[in-house]
Amino acid sequence: MKDVNIGICGLGTVGGGTWEVLQRNARLIAGRAGCNLKVARVASRRPRPDLGLGDTPFSTDIYDVIRDPSIDVVVELIGGYDEARALVLAAIAEGKHVVTANKALIAVYGNEIFNAAREKNVIVAYEAGVAGGIPVMKAIREGLAANRINWLAGIINGTGNYILTEMRAGRAFDEVLKEAQDLGYAEADPTFDVEGTDAAHKLTIMASAAFGVPLQFDRAYTEGISRLTPYDISHAEALGYRVKHLGIARSREDGIELRVHPTLVPEGNLIAKVDGVTNAILVDGDAVGQTMYHGPGAGDEATASSVIADLVDVARVVASGSDQRVPYLGFESEAVTDHQILSADEFRSAYYLRIQALDKPGVLAKIAAILSDQGINIESIMQKESELHDGHIPLILLTHTVLEKQVNKAISEIEALPEVEDQVVRIRAENFL
Ligand SMILES: NC(=O)C1=CN([C@@H]2O[C@H](COP(=O)(O)OP(=O)(O)OC[C@H]3O[C@@H](n4cnc5c(N)ncnc54)[C@H](O)[C@@H]3O)[C@@H](O)[C@H]2O)C=CC1
Ligand SMILES: N[C@@H](CC=O)C(=O)O
Ligand code: NA
Image 1 (spheres, rainbow, N blue to C red):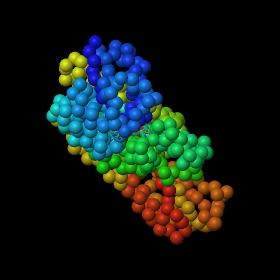
Image 2: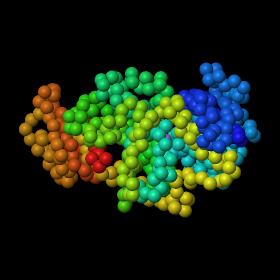
Image 3: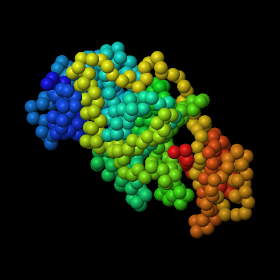
Image 4: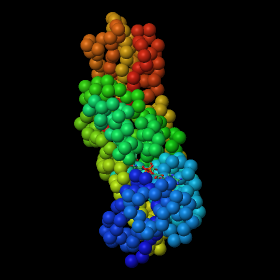
């Protein structure tokens, strides 16, 4: 059986997991790929004696992998933007295929990288970058190829969902984040997880493959979980919702909503029950209806599972000498359109609003009048006398679905009322899920 030679760059959480699974399941994987996936070289800043690399050449210079003429596929697992971009472009220039877990790289530089790869007739595969171990890109690009995809929505950051799950159990944000870092779930810069950047990277990639538009990370609306409070989480629950950090991509006649933010999800919805580091993506297609992809969104061997699936795809092409492959974002270049990405003002959603108002007659009427002037109907209202503090009492409202610009207008008018103190807390609620 032929060997396909693999060079791994970056032996951290995912690199280590990839090495381990390739060794453990070598025969099984070879049986599927039709060739041996041989790790012929590894490079990383620090050696990993715990992995038992044996005779496999190791160096601290990742470019040793690029320079090695025997390497067929470079596995980029160093992470980050610029160094990874340079490494991947250098690998492509050498005519090597690339497998990466780096969604930041693909979301931001994917258009450039895919063009370079097309010119050199090599493959760049990135399944591990989107929802870790879940083969969701395979589902979108291949399994759902018959469908007009209407929308997709899901939990696509394991660290964030882990934090929200533990916060519900009463644990402190910082303590749980530290634990997620120790478990290898978090990004090198964990603000990418908690401020929504990582989820926006993944959403950008899924949306392009779902709708056939170029990658446009800079057009994604991004809001993280760092400002969520246990208070709002528990009040949302009292209204029958769970607060989840979602990525939502929805195709409309007038454009595409591309947004990442904390979201109230009806408690009966499957997504509401997804806890811990688990990710879940619901995809709505015109032919199939809704399908859901659920599984570990981060972690060493779970992510390695996707890295190796990509390696098998590449190895089959290398070993068979064919150049048959799935287009990068599932669409042939001629079929990619310029359907615009909408601004946040154009989002349609329901809203949970928490208003800190003076407890005196007439205030509620003023707020109701502002909402009504903006055409906003109220679905439910909650106010507890027991939460009266310094003459102020939180008023919690759930609106019907409206345009976001109407809500923004209403919020600024409400915040300007002398009876209202602090900023209005606003969390989108999605009843269409
Ligand atoms: N940890 C996870 O669960 C997941 C991570 N990813 C992605 O996988 C990639 C790798 O992530 P992790 O393994 O978690 O990171 P990590 O920080 O554990 O590993 C990165 C490794 O690369 C090495 N490295 C970085 N720059 C280097 C350079 N210039 N020269 C030599 N070595 C260098 C580091 O020393 C480290 O050993 C990232 O793009 C990340 O976003 C994707 C899905 C899940
Ligand atoms: N930091 C990411 C890792 C996987 O993509 C996450 O927590 O989801
Ligand atoms: Na994946």
